[in-house]
Image (cartoon, rainbow, N blue to C red; front, side, top):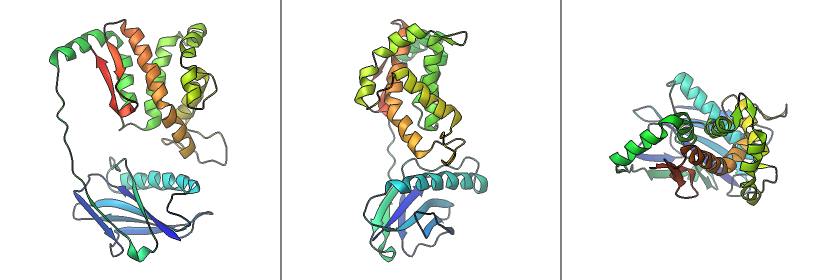
Length: 278
């Protein structure tokens, strides 16, 4: 049997971490669910304050995180963050990348690593910045929404809603959808949706995802309902459709720009999208 050691790093990040079986937590508590028993959560720290949280999940049959554990990991992360914001600082934050490892026995565990911060030195094209500012001022609301859609500091559902709002601004008149234009525009994206296994009409599917994000509900009374966080299933659903939503927003911005400024995507990664090209 294997034990999973799952870590969340607490901001600010440290240069080095070393967690061993002898590490003493600042606090610890035990959780139990119908699927998992004797799960231990500990918060560890240094002279600065809490530096990381460790969740220990014993009795796993393999060195993989089982799907049924994912909702619990999400629930623990969310409540851990809420607790830190209530007891440490209202703006307490976790590093966005959790870490985990597996051991055959708790007494043998050790996770040690260092972090090195690399500072980018982006070049600034002043003339390009002037052209972008001037040519997009009339569509500044859409530009702001697009930028919010790529901001990883914003929860995923709000990023998606920002992109969806670009669709609304372009295709709604006095609160009513211009349905024929919507159908004509989204028909060009149907094949890309099918490539991702989505066979519903693109606009219908995106609107369904929008409703999930706007209301943050699961639709079933026995599922966990969030306030600012999506369920694990909906989180994956939104994350999967974000590249398509981003490309749709790009197409709309390019139509709005009328050649004065264009948006281009440099790679398949949302984080590497670039706006705009003057």
